Length: 104
Image 1 (cartoon, rainbow, N blue to C red):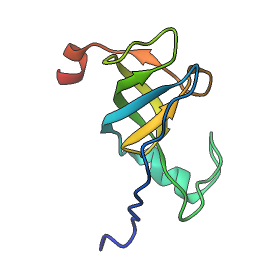
Image 2 (cartoon, helix red, strand yellow):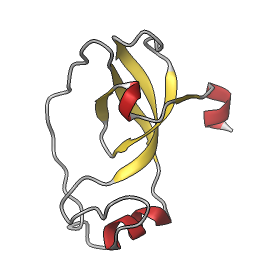
Image 3 (cartoon, one colour):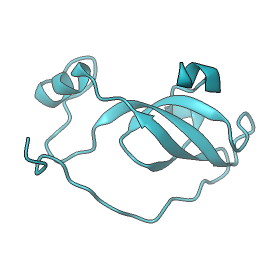
């Protein structure tokens, strides 16, 4: 790989609205399922060339307007490969994880 397979975009950090939270991703997964997602429809639609790849991530809540999550919580989620993201629980698979689980 030459590095030209990837595109780096910068944008303003989004602000969370009511029911949402701002997440700073700490770890992103890169796994074989992503290769399948680039090649064909599977359990999810094919990711077109140039679109953002979906992945599993562990992130820290920086700002929360969600009643179930406080700032500094560490969560696992299914999302896109962004450094920062605004998410709401209705379109994310959220599971609380402990710091000990992350570092083990």
